[in-house]
Each structure stands twice: as C-alpha cells, then as structure tokens.
Length: 270
Length: 173
Image 1 (tube, chains in turn cyan, blue):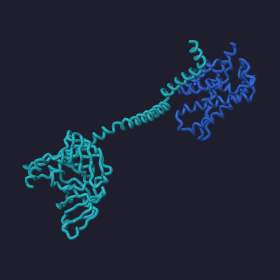
Image 2 (cartoon, rainbow over the protein chains, first blue to last red; image 1 turned 60 degrees about the vertical axis):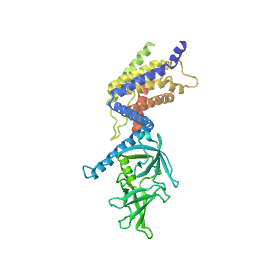
Image 3 (cartoon, rainbow over the protein chains, first blue to last red; image 1 turned 135 degrees about the horizontal axis):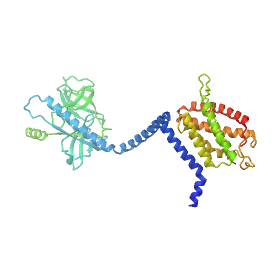
Image 4 (cartoon, rainbow over the protein chains, first blue to last red; image 1 turned 60 degrees about the horizontal axis):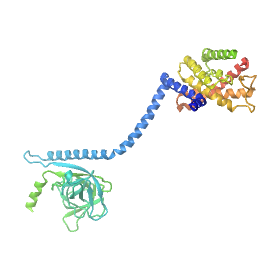
C-alpha cells in the first residue's frame, strides 16, 4: 500500500500530464473540424491498411479452397459450353445428341522429359472418372485416362509415344492424328493430312470429334511448319501445342454420356 | 505568502486578458507572410515560483490553456501545449540548475536570477510551447515546412515581446 502511494507521489505529475493530454486529445479530435477530419482520415488509413494486411494473410490460407471452387466453376462452364456447341451443331430434332459432363481436378504429379509421359490426377473413381475419358487443361488437351483407382487416376499424356489423338484443321474437314515424336514438350506432329488440304503456318488444329473421347472443336495447337512426306500423299506437320505442360496444374476430365453406346458399336464393327 | 498568491493570480489574469484582448487582434502580416503569432500566455506558468508543487503547475497549465482555448475557439489545442510546457518546466529547471543550487522558495525574476539564465530558461520553454502548439494545431506532419516557419517566426516575435514585458514590469515574486 505504502509502495503504491509512493509510486503515485513519484510519478503523479506524469500521470496528471498524461491524463490532461488524453483529455486534450479527446477535445481536439471531437470539437475541432480540421483536426477531427485529419484524425478520422488517418485512423481510417491505418485501420484500412491493417484490414488489408490481415485479409491478405487469411486469403492466403483460403487459397486452396478458393482454387477448388474456381476449378469447379470452370468445369461447370466448360460443360455448358460443350453441350451448347453440341446442341447448335446437331441439326435434326430426332437425333439423340451427345451430352458431356466435366469433372475438375488438380494435377498431383506429372512427368515431361521421358519418352512416355504420364500425369496423375487427384481425383479417381469415386469422383466419377473412368478409363478412357478425355482430359483437357486450361488451354488445350492433356491426354486420356488410362488407369483409375479409388481416388486417383493416371493420364496417358499427349506426350506419350502411344497416344494417338484424332484432330482436324479448324474450319476445314481434313483430319489426321496427333503423335508426340519430337521429344520436346512444346511440339507434336500431325500426321495423315491429305496433300490437297490448304495448310498455312499458324492454322489452328482442333479435336475432330470422330471419337467420343473429346468433343469436337477443342483447340489443340497451331501449325508452325509443314512438309510433304517424302514420296507420300500426306503432310507431315509440326504443331505447337497450346497447353504448356510445364505449368499446367489443373485438369478437366470430359465424360461423354453416350460413350459406352458408341464404343459397343465400334467394337462390333471391328 | 498571501500576497505572492494574489500576485500570481493577478498575473495570470492579466496575461490571459493581454493575450485574448490585445495580442489576438494584432495581425503580424507582411505581405503573404502570415506565419508570426504573438503567443505569450505561457509566461505566467514559466514564471511560477520554484517551489510550486508540480501537480499544481500542471493543473494550472491545463486550466489556463482551456481558458485560452475558449477565446481561440480551439478546444484542447492550447490546453495540450500549456500542459506539456508545465510538465516540462521541472526538467528544464533541473537542466539549468546552477552548481550551488537554487535558493529555496525563490521567485524567477531579474533580481534573483542573472539575465543570461533568465533569457535561456524562457527561450527554451517558450520554444517548446510553440513547437507543441503548432504541431498539435497542424495535427499532421505533412505541412512540416509550414509548421517550422510558424514556430520560428512566432518564437522570435513572442520572445522579443516577453523580454520587453519582463524588463518593463520586472516582477518581484
């Protein structure tokens, strides 16, 4: 008790000073227009800055969920686009038009530098992914599903020596197939375009839609170089792939609803 | 003792009236240079006797500042500056203490103190007071140049006026 009294006596003037300054500050910021506005403005600046910084931190922690939500959103939009495209191109009312559903996924792992490259998606059978579905990325096609497990699936990448993808020239009927034999993840080769097709450097290559794996008209790449195969009837075309496999981290798996029906028919024909 | 008290009360009243009735109406404007203000109401606080209890000094500073604020229509600004000045008075006195110490209960005036000491003491506290006042008045260091101009020009005119008043009136207590 005595110490408290001594303390107050010793620092009394200081506390008095502090008290009066606080009162003055209150008076100044409440009853003076200029100082009041400065005070309010700068405290707003400060609190705004603080809120912004904390937002940045919390945003960082919710980034994963945000990305997942965006992927789902993208998948939904993509699905819508594909189905609208199908509806627009099917001209008779009695044909059953093919429908697509799109499943979004993150890419868990990938290889680029091997002769036969694979991707692994973080979603599997329980999310509806089945063997044989097509996989596209943000800008172009990625490959097709060749194995699935409960919650993962393996993708036969476009950058695989066994992958054949049926593609066509945009706005022309000529079609061929895409093989990756360049060894460079940026380029692939387009085979079997008949030599009477009109090729131009920079022409866009799209999926042909002749199989049910990929819907018609998904952009794959553009022509950077072409020549007629020696002694042959077809062009050998170098394609710049739109999808950058180095940076791609999102995949959209395309499921064609009529796929099983179509496939059973093809098997019978064969 | 009683006469000392009355003397100080009268001095406070006189300085407050001098400040709000006379000096506030003096407009020291030279062309576009309007930074000089005569602010001498801190002098009674500065000249309080050496043995005035500190809490009393600080309370007096606050009250006188508030009264001045009433006339300036700027609640809190002068009070803040004068409270700070009253608070710092002791440290300046300690800083300027002669080797033999102050005489107990002595008043601060020309009879007791030497002229250079008085000039230095008043200039430090007056300058401190003006610094605090103009900083609070601007309430932002965006106008630093303007604040400095105001402080320096106001200090010069107020200081000269204070010295003149002290020489003419030469307080006993």
